[in-house]
Length: 188
Image (cartoon, rainbow, N blue to C red):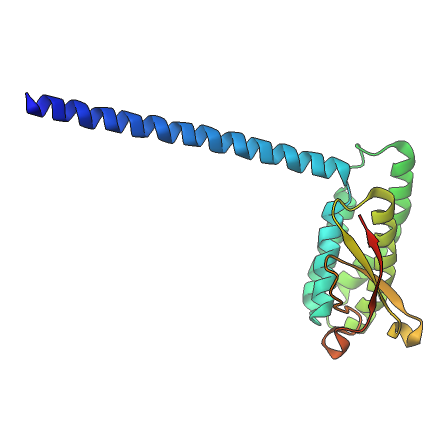
Protein backbone atom coordinates (compact mmCIF):
# COMPACT_ATOMS: atom_id res chain seq x y z
CA UNK A 1 0.00 0.00 0.00
CA UNK A 2 2.86 2.36 0.84
CA UNK A 3 4.37 1.61 -2.55
CA UNK A 4 1.15 2.63 -4.32
CA UNK A 5 1.04 5.95 -2.45
CA UNK A 6 4.72 6.46 -3.19
CA UNK A 7 4.18 5.79 -6.94
CA UNK A 8 1.15 8.13 -6.98
CA UNK A 9 3.14 10.85 -5.20
CA UNK A 10 6.06 10.54 -7.64
CA UNK A 11 3.61 10.62 -10.57
CA UNK A 12 1.92 13.74 -9.21
CA UNK A 13 5.25 15.50 -8.74
CA UNK A 14 6.34 14.55 -12.25
CA UNK A 15 3.06 15.78 -13.78
CA UNK A 16 3.29 18.99 -11.78
CA UNK A 17 6.86 19.58 -12.93
CA UNK A 18 5.94 18.94 -16.57
CA UNK A 19 2.97 21.27 -16.32
CA UNK A 20 5.14 23.95 -14.67
CA UNK A 21 7.75 23.56 -17.43
CA UNK A 22 5.01 23.94 -20.02
CA UNK A 23 3.77 27.13 -18.32
CA UNK A 24 7.30 28.53 -18.23
CA UNK A 25 7.68 27.73 -21.91
CA UNK A 26 4.39 29.49 -22.69
CA UNK A 27 5.47 32.51 -20.63
CA UNK A 28 8.83 32.55 -22.40
CA UNK A 29 7.09 32.45 -25.80
CA UNK A 30 4.80 35.31 -24.75
CA UNK A 31 7.83 37.34 -23.64
CA UNK A 32 9.58 36.64 -26.96
CA UNK A 33 6.47 37.70 -28.88
CA UNK A 34 6.28 40.86 -26.79
CA UNK A 35 9.96 41.56 -27.41
CA UNK A 36 9.44 41.10 -31.15
CA UNK A 37 6.55 43.59 -31.04
CA UNK A 38 8.75 46.16 -29.29
CA UNK A 39 11.41 45.63 -31.95
CA UNK A 40 8.82 46.11 -34.71
CA UNK A 41 7.61 49.34 -33.11
CA UNK A 42 11.20 50.57 -32.74
CA UNK A 43 11.89 49.76 -36.38
CA UNK A 44 8.79 51.68 -37.46
CA UNK A 45 9.64 54.69 -35.33
CA UNK A 46 13.22 54.71 -36.58
CA UNK A 47 13.59 53.19 -40.04
CA UNK A 48 17.28 54.15 -40.24
CA UNK A 49 18.34 52.57 -36.94
CA UNK A 50 19.81 49.47 -38.62
CA UNK A 51 21.90 51.67 -40.91
CA UNK A 52 22.99 53.74 -37.95
CA UNK A 53 24.18 50.65 -36.07
CA UNK A 54 26.33 49.61 -39.04
CA UNK A 55 27.69 53.17 -39.31
CA UNK A 56 28.59 53.17 -35.60
CA UNK A 57 30.45 49.88 -36.01
CA UNK A 58 32.37 51.40 -38.91
CA UNK A 59 33.14 54.50 -36.82
CA UNK A 60 34.47 52.30 -34.03
CA UNK A 61 36.62 50.40 -36.52
CA UNK A 62 38.17 53.70 -37.64
CA UNK A 63 38.71 54.69 -34.00
CA UNK A 64 40.74 51.48 -33.67
CA UNK A 65 42.57 52.06 -36.99
CA UNK A 66 40.95 48.86 -38.33
CA UNK A 67 40.72 49.43 -42.08
CA UNK A 68 39.58 45.85 -42.74
CA UNK A 69 36.80 46.06 -40.15
CA UNK A 70 35.71 49.40 -41.59
CA UNK A 71 35.66 47.87 -45.09
CA UNK A 72 33.53 44.98 -43.84
CA UNK A 73 31.09 47.36 -42.13
CA UNK A 74 30.96 49.51 -45.29
CA UNK A 75 30.06 46.46 -47.37
CA UNK A 76 27.31 45.63 -44.85
CA UNK A 77 26.06 49.20 -45.11
CA UNK A 78 26.03 49.05 -48.90
CA UNK A 79 23.95 45.86 -48.74
CA UNK A 80 21.62 47.38 -46.12
CA UNK A 81 21.14 50.52 -48.23
CA UNK A 82 20.36 48.42 -51.30
CA UNK A 83 17.95 46.19 -49.35
CA UNK A 84 16.31 49.01 -47.38
CA UNK A 85 12.52 48.57 -47.27
CA UNK A 86 11.02 51.95 -48.15
CA UNK A 87 7.43 50.71 -48.02
CA UNK A 88 6.85 52.21 -44.55
CA UNK A 89 8.01 55.65 -45.72
CA UNK A 90 5.76 58.41 -47.02
CA UNK A 91 6.31 59.52 -50.59
CA UNK A 92 8.34 62.63 -49.69
CA UNK A 93 10.38 60.55 -47.20
CA UNK A 94 11.17 58.01 -49.93
CA UNK A 95 12.53 60.75 -52.17
CA UNK A 96 14.64 62.22 -49.34
CA UNK A 97 15.92 58.76 -48.41
CA UNK A 98 16.82 57.90 -52.00
CA UNK A 99 18.73 61.18 -52.49
CA UNK A 100 20.78 60.65 -49.34
CA UNK A 101 21.18 56.90 -49.88
CA UNK A 102 22.62 57.35 -53.39
CA UNK A 103 25.50 59.40 -51.97
CA UNK A 104 25.91 57.11 -48.96
CA UNK A 105 26.16 54.06 -51.25
CA UNK A 106 29.01 55.65 -53.19
CA UNK A 107 30.95 56.42 -50.02
CA UNK A 108 30.28 53.01 -48.48
CA UNK A 109 31.45 51.39 -51.71
CA UNK A 110 34.74 53.36 -51.64
CA UNK A 111 35.34 52.47 -48.00
CA UNK A 112 34.56 48.81 -48.68
CA UNK A 113 36.87 48.56 -51.70
CA UNK A 114 39.85 50.32 -50.10
CA UNK A 115 40.94 48.16 -47.18
CA UNK A 116 44.63 48.87 -46.79
CA UNK A 117 44.22 52.57 -47.62
CA UNK A 118 42.73 53.95 -44.40
CA UNK A 119 43.43 57.57 -45.39
CA UNK A 120 41.20 57.22 -48.46
CA UNK A 121 38.59 55.34 -46.43
CA UNK A 122 38.50 58.15 -43.86
CA UNK A 123 37.98 60.74 -46.60
CA UNK A 124 34.84 58.89 -47.66
CA UNK A 125 33.84 58.32 -44.04
CA UNK A 126 33.80 62.11 -43.64
CA UNK A 127 31.29 62.40 -46.49
CA UNK A 128 29.34 59.33 -45.31
CA UNK A 129 29.07 60.93 -41.86
CA UNK A 130 27.32 63.94 -43.45
CA UNK A 131 24.88 61.58 -45.19
CA UNK A 132 24.19 59.70 -41.96
CA UNK A 133 23.66 62.99 -40.13
CA UNK A 134 21.06 63.94 -42.76
CA UNK A 135 19.34 60.54 -42.41
CA UNK A 136 19.23 60.72 -38.63
CA UNK A 137 17.94 64.32 -38.70
CA UNK A 138 15.23 63.38 -41.21
CA UNK A 139 14.14 60.05 -39.73
CA UNK A 140 15.33 60.11 -36.08
CA UNK A 141 17.68 57.56 -34.62
CA UNK A 142 15.51 55.90 -32.02
CA UNK A 143 18.25 56.59 -29.48
CA UNK A 144 20.44 59.48 -28.30
CA UNK A 145 23.23 60.20 -30.76
CA UNK A 146 26.04 62.69 -30.38
CA UNK A 147 27.38 64.75 -33.26
CA UNK A 148 31.09 65.18 -32.65
CA UNK A 149 33.47 67.57 -34.35
CA UNK A 150 37.23 67.41 -34.97
CA UNK A 151 38.63 70.82 -36.00
CA UNK A 152 41.99 69.41 -37.15
CA UNK A 153 40.90 66.83 -39.75
CA UNK A 154 41.29 67.61 -43.45
CA UNK A 155 44.03 70.26 -43.09
CA UNK A 156 42.17 72.02 -40.28
CA UNK A 157 38.91 72.25 -42.26
CA UNK A 158 37.32 69.96 -39.70
CA UNK A 159 34.88 67.07 -39.89
CA UNK A 160 31.94 65.68 -37.95
CA UNK A 161 30.87 62.17 -37.07
CA UNK A 162 28.06 60.49 -35.17
CA UNK A 163 28.67 58.66 -31.92
CA UNK A 164 26.66 56.57 -29.50
CA UNK A 165 28.66 57.89 -26.53
CA UNK A 166 29.40 61.35 -25.21
CA UNK A 167 33.05 60.41 -24.76
CA UNK A 168 35.15 61.58 -27.73
CA UNK A 169 36.75 58.79 -29.73
CA UNK A 170 38.04 60.26 -32.96
CA UNK A 171 37.64 58.07 -36.07
CA UNK A 172 39.68 60.42 -38.27
CA UNK A 173 42.91 60.18 -36.28
CA UNK A 174 42.27 56.90 -34.48
CA UNK A 175 44.83 55.97 -31.88
CA UNK A 176 47.10 58.85 -32.96
CA UNK A 177 44.76 61.51 -31.49
CA UNK A 178 41.88 59.54 -30.01
CA UNK A 179 40.36 62.32 -27.90
CA UNK A 180 40.63 65.20 -30.38
CA UNK A 181 37.21 66.80 -30.77
CA UNK A 182 34.13 68.08 -29.03
CA UNK A 183 30.44 67.27 -28.86
CA UNK A 184 28.71 69.65 -31.23
CA UNK A 185 25.08 68.51 -30.97
CA UNK A 186 22.80 65.86 -29.48
CA UNK A 187 20.17 64.12 -31.60
CA UNK A 188 17.28 62.12 -30.22
